[in-house]
Image (cartoon, rainbow, N blue to C red; front, side):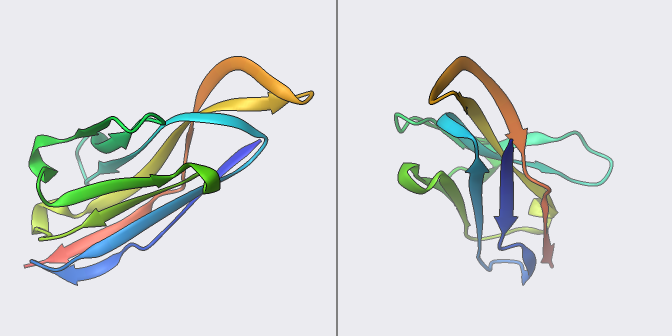
Amino acid sequence: QVQLVESGGGLVQAGGSLRLSCAASGSIFSINAMGWYRQAPGKQRELVAALTSGGSTNYADSVKGRFTISRDNAKNSVALQMNSLRPEDTAVYYCKADVEILSHGWGTGVTSDYWGQGTQVTVSS
């Protein structure tokens, strides 16, 4: 019912920048929070940054001051600008959206989390 497609990952040297993008499509009535998570090999998936529809942000301490999350509500999309990248930022990055499904012309009143397929970010030292 809802698909999230990410783009923008790749290989970059330490100190470099990358921009990740994620677009949601499908039977969407509304989207509450959208965010980015990452999972490095052998580690648990962790929150990187999240942004509510009202504009409130939440960042992991490790990325504060380096990463910026932004959102286009009209396009159901979210982006993550990553600057001053470090080797420890290497991970698969996943987009997540908290979506209320459109049904019979209105929202269902229930939200569910949807995930993208992930995009690899590799930072070389």
